[in-house]
Every structure is written in C-alpha cells, then in structure tokens.
Length: 177
Image (tube, rainbow, N blue to C red; front, side):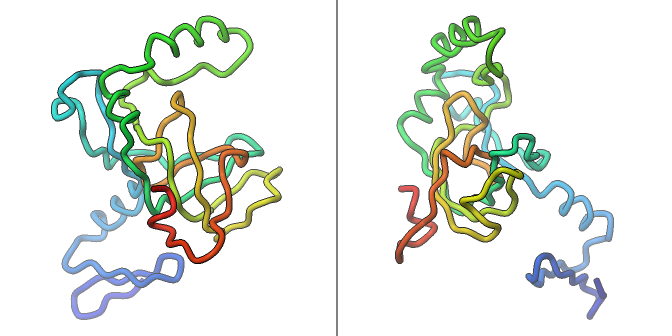
C-alpha cells in the first residue's frame, strides 16, 4: 500500500484499486465488508417494501469438504424468485423441516433476511478438500436449492455437484440466462 497524490492505492489480488481522499479506517471497513447481497426482510406481495441491499454480510465459509466458493459474475431474476418473495413454497419447506428435523440439516427458507436467486455464473475462488473437479480460477455456472441462501450476492458457497465448467466461447456474464 502506498500513498500517491493524496490518494490511497492498494493492490488486491493483482488488481490496482484507488480511492481518493478516504481515511484509512474507511478503506479497511470497505475491504472487510466486501460481501453484499439483495435480500428480503419478510414475505409480502409488495416487493418494494421488503427488498433491500445489504452491504454488511460475512464472507461464506467453506464448511463442507465438497463445497466451492464462487465470486458471482451474473445471477438472473426468475419468476420463481418473485414468487418466493411473496412466500411461494414456504409451507412445503416448513413441512420438509418437520420431517427432516432429526436426519438432515434444517432448511433456511423462512429465516430472514433471505437472499434469493437460484442460478449463477462466476469464478471459483475457494474449494473444500474433497473438490477435485474444479480449481481456483475456473469459470463456472450452476444452481442453488431454494432452501439455501441465494445467488443475488457477490460471493456464494455451493456444493460441487451443483456447479459445471463454462465451456466454449459463451460469456461468463451471459451463461446463467
């Protein structure tokens, strides 16, 4: 890190970023809270009342050996996402929670704030110890289950079985559409 012309410059993973006339603590706070997402605070027919942009999220942690961490390049908004804002599927997932209470990880669909989004494309930036198909830097596309936090975030963790390599000349930004 060095100061040039009263502007702070720093390199992050090979990218030069500049921020003019910001105090050091503001830069540090930005770097530490670099994960953000579009989220909903409740179920409601009026999406404008419940949708907000959250800039204070923690980086997802790879806590399973078969998970990959992806920096999202693109995520689409599907009719399912709009319906889920209004509570679509909530009753079914509550029943699945009751049935699977003792055998499986609890579903998180009714926990707020909730990040929606099911499909994505992006770049692998981390992986669990049993992930052999993908390496850091691979361009991938994939899906997330409706009971997990969604893809309308800049970083997500996802099981390797829900991810595929982007083949050919298709743009990473257009692959999930």
